[in-house]
Length: 512
Image (cartoon, rainbow, N blue to C red):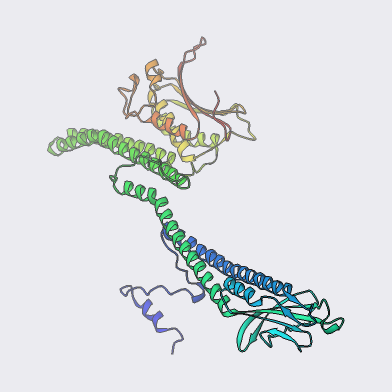
């Protein structure tokens, strides 16, 4: 028999069976239940903590109350003991206590219980009051009263006992002592303590209940702004990405609202970019597609091979323009999406010389077809260090390709286009220099506007997105794009246009 469990075979038998449920975690590692609401979390922490504190307070109050009741009763007991001792006389040669029962009646009214007293000689031969009151467990010291608990005829009592020297001596015996005792029944004291404790517990329980209710009400009232915030967000339209109003919200919640607002702002910008892309695509591709449809219908109707070939050539040119337009629009959309990416651009160190050489090599076939001299100039770059910037390489390649493509389009046959890389220690410059006709002042001022073509480009294929792409990519990298005409020099050098991307040092803006 196989050592594998049968469930493993069934699980591997085919894909049609239901997936086995995930195994439960070991008992010691199961997740503990936790409330999923802020209100529940607050109450879960605060209410038990408050109950624990109040319970400890009640216990401390009970102990303190018992101690204070015992102290008060013991003081009254000592007072009665002193009063009886004060009214005890041995002047007659025996024991005499003046008005003891009047004193005891007053003491009984004070403690609200049964009171006993006893005055006796040390040998017990003479005594007044309740006989056989329990003596203390420890030996007595003259003049120092002792208080202790005992049983008197099976009744728990609290006894105060005082030993003092008899003055004058009893029956002429020097050194004789008398014992004065006062006892109080503990039942009444315990009933009094129980009544006091009951009232104290009732008060503390009432305080706990009121505190819990106030705590719950405080949590509910404190979280009410969050409920209003939820209602506001629930009532919004799906396309409403306006910032959330933070007025009235607790200060602890405002950073969260600020983060949500920043996130919504990024989403709003992304939505705006997407809408703009869709609008641009529908606007710019509608005409080429309509022209292609017309040309296709014409080619299908045409019987003359020459005319059919001309129609197909026109369709191919139209598809080429549409393809270029689509690629440019996608590049522009990707660049804008990267500008909205959280965490910034995923940059790396890029060698501008290697990048320029790669772009120029890819453009040489176009330059040769148009009989244009396309070259490189790295004369001002140190061979050891090169010219390196922190950038996204494919974005810079796209920007430089657009600049070189524009230069090749507007440079007449026999002209010259030079890609120059320079580094002055502060800024790196990527320059595309052509010998074309340059741009007018109005075109220079409005260069980089989407779908705008200058006067020189009215008769050239394109959609007016090249410089817009370059401008967007330069902005993403903290660089500047500058365009200026280069006049012809006195030695007969041709004029033209210089397009310059200026990159600052890492962590710095580009300086002019």
